[in-house]
Every structure is written in C-alpha cells, then in structure tokens.
Image (tube, rainbow, N blue to C red):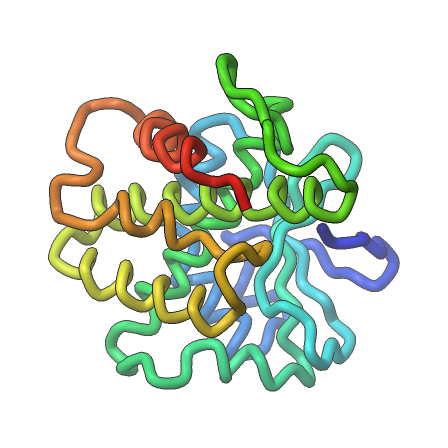
Length: 223
C-alpha cells in the first residue's frame, strides 16, 4: 500500500489533461485508462487521480493508495524506467489494452476498500492456514491481488472480448515473472479460473462476477 505524500503530488482531473502539464507518457496512460475511471466514478467509487511530479525511480508506475476515505490512483512515471519496461514485449497496438487492464485492476482494489472489505474474507470462509504474522499478511495481499486481477479480466471480457485471451496470457506471464507460487502476487489460481471466453458471462456487475470466481479461488489458497 502506498504511503501518500500530498505535498509531492499533483491531482489531475481527466477533462483537463491537455492543460495539466502532464508528460506524453502520463497522458497516454490516463487516456488508455479513462473508460475504467469513468465507470468507477459512475459506480460511486471515491477515486482521485494523482501524478507524482518528481522523479520516482523503481516505483510501481501505476498503483492505488488510500487517504482520507478516498482511493488515490497514483502515477509514478517520471525518471522511472519501469514505466516503459512493464510493457516490453507487448505489441504496440495492444499496449493501450494492457494499461486499461492495469487500471481496472486498481479499481478492483478501490472497490474492496470503499466497501470496507479490505483484507476481509467473505462470510463462510475461515482462514485455517498458518497464523504467523508474515504468512497472514502475505496471504491477505495475494487474495486482494487475485480479486483485483479478476475485476480487470471481467472488465476486459465485457469491453474487449476479442482481445480477452491476449490480456489473460499477458497477466499470467507478468505474475510468473513476479515470483514463485505462494508469493504475495501469485494469483495463478484465480487466473486459471478465468480461462475461456465464457468465464464472465452473465448480467451481474463486474465486481459481482469477479466475486464469484474469487470465492472459488479462495478455497484453494492455503499457501
């Protein structure tokens, strides 16, 4: 979770991006994610866009923080090689899709926070795994990442079905690169459940569809 430093950040509203002094890279990312942000706000999520104006080497380019009861979608791209590296290997014509998926992932985190469910298991689930503090925190983080991945995939399924397989494969490769099974971002158990073009068929909201698969994945998450 980000530690927010308000005096070092610049809050941006989407309609004024062109006059905001954003870099071309920041503008491309915000434009690619703007449909997701608009949807989140339509759903009543308390989300603000924050751009780090100072150099942020090695920071996560796009992340979510919480401050004052609101979600802060934070871009840390200046002086940050990861902002370009995260999309290496992705065809140029698909990069906007992956940025859109990453934005939807962060919106999944915001929804959990706004509902007061952060690190909370759904009713009927009991964590019977090892109770050490470090292991418990790791599992909680992994489960939130799994839910957010599913929200991202539900969004892509509903908006970009023809590209769904490519996005799912890319997310799987990213998770494999991030560490071994059982790590804080090892969401493969949920990604497997999201395979197939009918994974998110139904009339329920994106968050409700993600919740169905998330609950299934929780049953096998004992690492």
